[in-house]
Length: 278
Ligand SMILES: NC(=O)C1=CN([C@@H]2O[C@H](COP(=O)(O)OP(=O)(O)OC[C@H]3O[C@@H](n4cnc5c(N)ncnc54)[C@H](OP(=O)(O)O)[C@@H]3O)[C@@H](O)[C@H]2O)C=CC1
Ligand SMILES: Cc1cn([C@H]2C[C@H](O)[C@@H](COP(=O)(O)OP(=O)(O)O[C@H]3O[C@@H](C)C(=O)[C@@H](O)[C@H]3O)O2)c(=O)[nH]c1=O
Image (cartoon, rainbow, N blue to C red; front, top):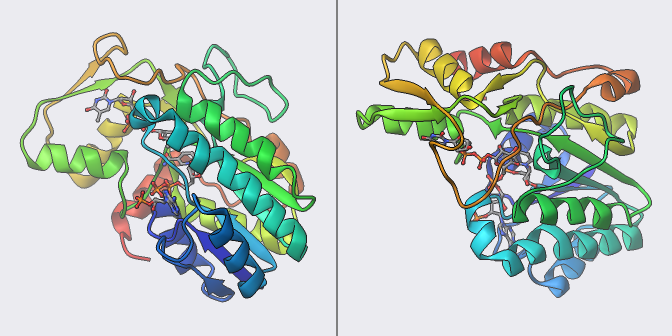
């Protein structure tokens, strides 16, 4: 398949470049495919003529989104509408990546696809609007995922490793629960999903759940690092953006669609540590 990937410099796009290498991939740099430019989106999509577009581009700095809501709206929502129009014109399938932060986190069991959303941050609100925009393309797959990381890129794992390498005392919240998900696992699952033509809204996270502190503990244990790590509460670690206290997503619908390539989060972390380069 001819596949166009946006947000080429990001961590998920890097995984797709490796995992989807048997497909005809086009990953334009931001200078060529700037999502804030409707004309760039239309001209790249119409010249590449992809069968599938994977939108990995987004404004993902959750705290910065609070102070730059217009930019967040433009990249996370408006641009997705432009992509949806361009895909519709080419009869292409649009794969939109969305987030657990569309929920407010007051739930007590894993969120299903049809559970009501209620984002509590600008990032979450704009990503939810992005889902609605993506759904304007008749062939669309919206993959909701969470806590993405891998051996490369800007993510929680690398933040923790860098902080520990600098000898910093680490206080990490132990009252926000979710599912850490590797970019490589998501890229593998999306490949099967695209090849089999899955459509609609599909939760796509690693299995199991932990807290950010539990995730940090597992990272340091897995790497054999004696970090100075302490649990704290959300109140002890104030941030500009509110995060959901509970944002585990239910994978039952995904498992009903076809092969389940999403491992337990601990197994996925082990793979990242044992095989950092794909
Ligand atoms: N990271 C996570 O934990 C999660 C991410 N997601 C979603 O998954 C997708 C991939 O995220 P991830 O790979 O982690 O994020 P990254 O931040 O690693 O990648 C996003 C990319 O989008 C690029 N980008 C930003 N603005 C533009 C623009 N105007 N034009 C073109 N590209 C732009 C960024 O470039 P630059 O860095 O130069 O700004 C960056 O390379 C996103 O949709 C995100 O919302 C969902 C759940 C969890
Ligand atoms: C770095 C750090 C963070 N924290 C807290 C802050 C926050 O509540 C939580 C996670 O911090 P981060 O800012 O690294 O992660 P955050 O940017 O909130 O991660 C989110 O990114 C977006 C893009 C998503 O879509 C989400 O699924 C999720 O992965 O850990 C600590 O308690 N101590 C620390 O030293």
